Image 1 (cartoon, rainbow, N blue to C red):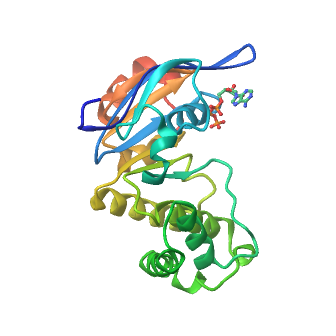
Image 2 (cartoon, protein in one colour):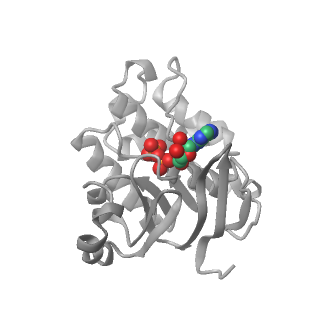
Image 3 (cartoon, helix red, strand yellow):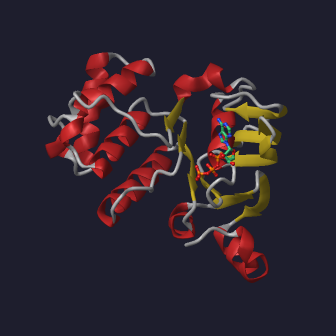
Length: 235
Ligand code: ATP
């Protein structure tokens, strides 16, 4: 794998029964880039991310993630926000972040210290001592996002991170993603909303029907819109 890429995939395929959910996807995500995977519901975005993370194995194709052909070998260097959100409701926000850091190999006290610091920096300091069950859905989602980045991963994979967030929390999320990129991380996120990609992504891939239909910049995608409108997600 060329060292200037955090992640490459060639010919990824995944079948569930008779359904070919991912039908030969190629991806190359440059290091230090914010990269968007776009596509309508059911396009194959989540399955592609899960293949890249090694949560599921492909039926065909190759992956190389942070230099490893088995992504699970480098899972401590990856942060992941799954599409199904989930934190223990009885944990306080700062403990939830510390817990996620500890799962990725951080010392508990250090993870807790970082969690408090990150909540403060994100303007969520008042939530630190609140139990997850007392937070709004959007706040809990941001806490989970902070938990996915507390171990300072080289690669951050976020599945539909904007969904369910109000405009204020969407702005907080954008700021967090940009700060992670400025720290040197590579960010890969899925969305079905072009506007989110437009504000953040240096490059995007559009997936529809399990196939990659486009790869390039958002401006290049927009130039193709009139001809390929059926492939581009709603904005
Ligand atoms: P969404 O935005 O709705 O989550 P998506 O682009 O992430 O969509 P996927 O969740 O990857 O799409 O699903 C792609 C296709 O594969 C869909 O038709 C889905 O129903 C099917 N699929 C995904 N996971 C499974 C599974 N575990 N078993 C059976 N079919 C699945």
